[in-house]
Amino acid sequence: MDCGPLVHDAGVVAQGRILSSDVVCRNTTERTVDLHELVTGCPCLAISPSTPGEIAPGASVHLRLTLSTDGLTDRVGFPVETVLHAGSQPVALFHYEADVRPSVIAYPEYIDLGDWKRGGEKTFLLVDTTGASFGIEKASSSRNTVEVRWVQVGLLRVNGHWTIASGKAAVSGYQVTLQPHAAGKDGRRSLSDEVVLDLRHAVQRTVRVRVMGFSQ
Image (cartoon, rainbow, N blue to C red; front, side, top):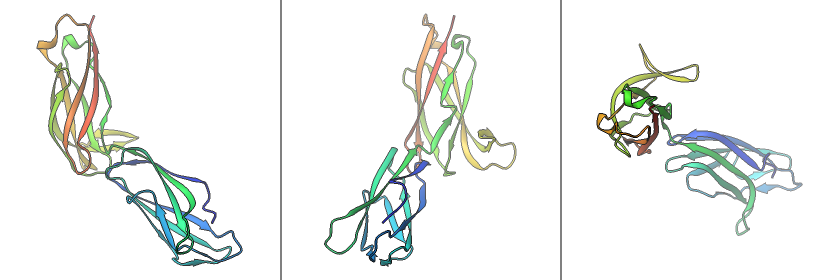
């Protein structure tokens, strides 16, 4: 069976999304092939052929791959194999890969407070790229150098950037505000911290945002 490339890459997908892909396989042998069983390396990846059963020489079959990304993180890859007849060893068809990223992201992901001893606030947006609803349970900073506040807002994606919607919103998210603690403005010139946001979300539990600052 010829299924094209040895690796089929689904690209970047948000965690929690169900991804569907189609792969065409052609019987390049001179005999009928029976896709008796299709095997993947993970129960999260299901495969269903368009025409179950025997594939004549030169004929093709469409395989619908359905990947559930719940519980998956980073780049994942699974072998796809077939059993040509009962009792035979599985035969490799191809490898299926995807780059699973957290669905709830901070925009931007890095915050520069500038001259942090002069005070001043900086904000960022928190959004679920799949459109799913979520909440913020609590927020803290690892070194307790910044105060964290948030408010729920409607968001739109315009020209590749997330922005607060003035009218009808595509998704609901949060505007998060960071304010340096006055008690922390001691003799240190630099500030390096990490804000941790604990979420109420079906899949994702936390978002971490790096915070930096420097004062003359």
